[in-house]
Length: 193
Ligand SMILES: CC(C)(COP(=O)(O)OP(=O)(O)OC[C@H]1O[C@@H](n2cnc3c(N)ncnc32)[C@H](O)[C@@H]1OP(=O)(O)O)[C@@H](O)C(=O)NCCC(=O)NCCS
Image (cartoon, rainbow, N blue to C red; front, side):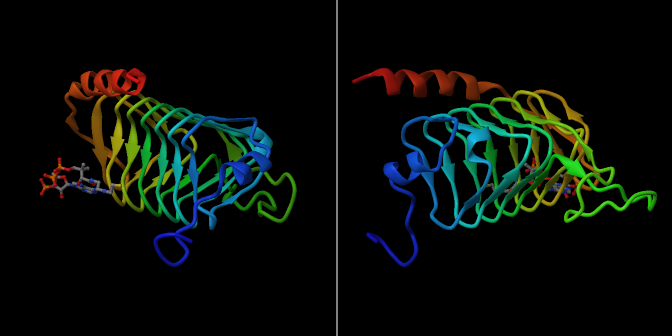
């Protein structure tokens, strides 16, 4: 333990023993993260998963490159989750690909198989992100560069390079796309020996 109490990230050997379907290089997964169904999870390079994250998504998860998942965030449900390059999920974010059936017409409960939960994939386009404490629910779709602010809720498609916030989330402002030029520079710097 180099720099403080409980600051350990998994070693390369530990990462490889978990059985991910793919794992890139420079991947940091904190030792307190709980990740199940690893054979259905693929991870690109320069991905960081912070302390106390829970990934328990039966529909599989695909991480691109340079993806960050902040502490205490939860990814769960039966639909697929795809996180494109440079996606940033802040802390205490809930990403749920299934919704329980709350109509009262079924026995919809996490301990009971079946039960009428509604599931859908959730896709995060490149350079999209979610602020602290937000809820991302089935039906949400982040186009490239779309951002959901803190303490917000989304269950709908979002437009590219646009900021959303609130409960329910509303469109706020358009984002500039200068990020893409910086991305090119950054990727070029990675190629330079
Ligand atoms: C969405 C966000 C990017 C907008 O920032 P901004 O463009 O500077 O917006 P402002 O603070 O000027 O707010 C503009 C209006 O939107 C409202 N608003 C901003 N963020 C909001 C939010 N998350 N939920 C609800 N309303 C929000 C403000 O109250 C303000 O309303 P008003 O004009 O009626 O006073 C920012 O508020 C936010 O949520 N950032 C995420 C922070 C975070 O989670 N950081 C951790 C990253 S790892």
